Each structure stands twice: as C-alpha cells, then as structure tokens.
Length: 168
Image 1: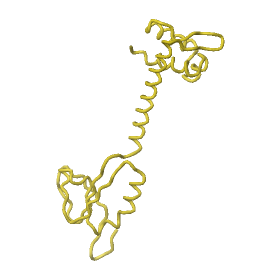
Image 2 (image 1 turned 60 degrees about the horizontal axis):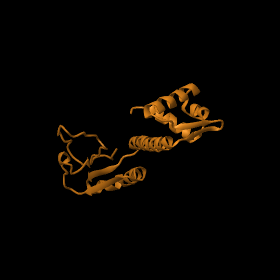
Image 3 (image 1 turned 90 degrees about the vertical axis):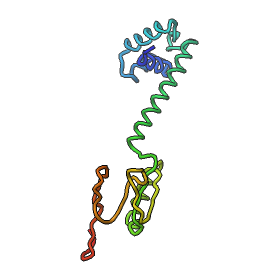
Image 4 (image 1 turned 60 degrees about the vertical axis):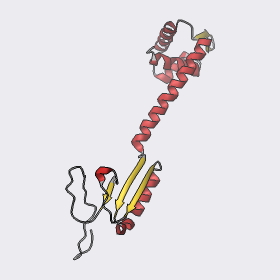
C-alpha cells in the first residue's frame, strides 16, 4: 500500500475528531480530506470511521490504522529530527595532533567547541611525534615548520611567527 498522504490525513481526522479540523491542519479542502478517507477505506476494504453529528469515531480497523499512522508519524518526525540535528551538530571523534607549546593557544577554543558539540569527543595528542593523517592517527594536525606537500592534506596557515619579530 502506498497511501502515505491518505494515511496522514486519516491520522489527523482521528486525532482531531473532525474533517474540518483535519483540513485546516493539513491545509486541504474538506472535500480532499473526505476523498483521502474514501480512498484509504477502499484500499483497506473496510470502514475506518463511523461518521456522526459530533464528528468521527474510529472503528476497530480505524484503531489499527491509527496505530500504524502514529508509528509512521513518530518515525518520520524522528528522521526529520535526526536530519536537522546532523546539520546542526558534529558527532563522533576528532583526533587533534598538536605540539605541546601550542596547546595553550587552542585550549579555550577546543573547550568552546566541545561545549557546542557535546556528542563530539576531541582526543588531543600533544607531542613531538608526527601523526600520519593518511592512517587516521589524527584528523587535524597543528605543526610548526615547512608546509607538507602530501597531496591528500588540506593545509591552512594558522599563524606565522619569526624569531626576529612578533607573531601575527
């Protein structure tokens, strides 16, 4: 069955109790809501609602449809939330290799990053050892010296410093 729109419509009618309320919520005309209910009932081979003057009441089949529609809504809401969350937050692990004397320059920025991304773990290797990025020993490396020419490395100048003048 590929009647997702009709299922969503039936869910709103069941939740709100009337075709008018469902139509307003969904931005449909009342006739469209009625047509969706009719199509879904035809597809399922039975009545979903008992129609009466005060609104709509679910039949036994309607109760089953409501449970399925509710689960589908929860799953799509969860998916939408995870997609939005994935765009807004960084998760996982970031390995940072840094020379020990530079840690003081970045520790506040790293703490702010962790506070903004609580599902991201930052692992810091503050040593003289050169991490091999191509083997995943680090994701980010802050080093002094000559710019590496490895074709897979993305290199940015963090700051320049010479012994004759001050750092910038």
